[in-house]
Image (cartoon, rainbow, N blue to C red; front, side, top):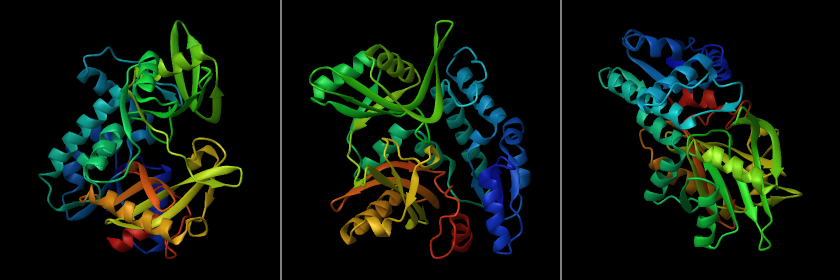
Length: 358
């Protein structure tokens, strides 16, 4: 097995540990930064029949910066400074560089039929473009929150809300991940507004800088909310229908389900009392079997299977869902959605299960 990854990253450590438990030899790692600098290394790495898995490049700041600068060049944009830790900077340019890298990788893999690719680059690129991915899922009959389209800024958001007669929406960066930059926006008839987000703002030298933090904040000052929306919209932002999550105690939850070869396997409830329930934000895990009724569980499995059919060439995908009253909506597809340490299905973790299916 060959990985395009960052050696020493959590994903690589967990996968190598799974292979050791199954008495399989360690996977070989081709570093993202090395492949970006010398694409011919891929042909050498995949010279023999093998299984090839692409992991995200974000674990390596040097690879992230290279993709960001490649994107700036492709967009005919001045190079940006290196982002600080956790900074949301030119996400649209980063994706332009990443998308071009995935296209180059796909072209290389077309000449290397001996490599069995876990998730093809084109699927990975599509799932990384969150707006295009949701449009793709909807076109394949998957129930998703209604998309309201791209948001150009705060004023555009307000006009869109008036047009659709809405008072609450979720705003999502088109190329974000792990709830970075997501905003739960609400307003009432009296004009009071509220934006709940993990995005922190800093103002320096006339520039508004955004940082992804673990502390969820609630903003109610209209000027702050406008600045936040404008800063996110500059990196591409879209809006979607607000769907209520099922309640549990004083909080609520949604679900992450991993599909392997199109079949739903590992699943976990993400429980919290804040708008974003991503597990890295210190929310709690729950057992869906204790939370979902039989019709809800059937809806979860059917929706996951249908979503996986929209990516038939991808062997390992993660899906975030809201399931209520026998209906399931897919919030997101994730090509790198198998990072769920310690979560077992049939006594195997996500990486062991992948090896068994392979």
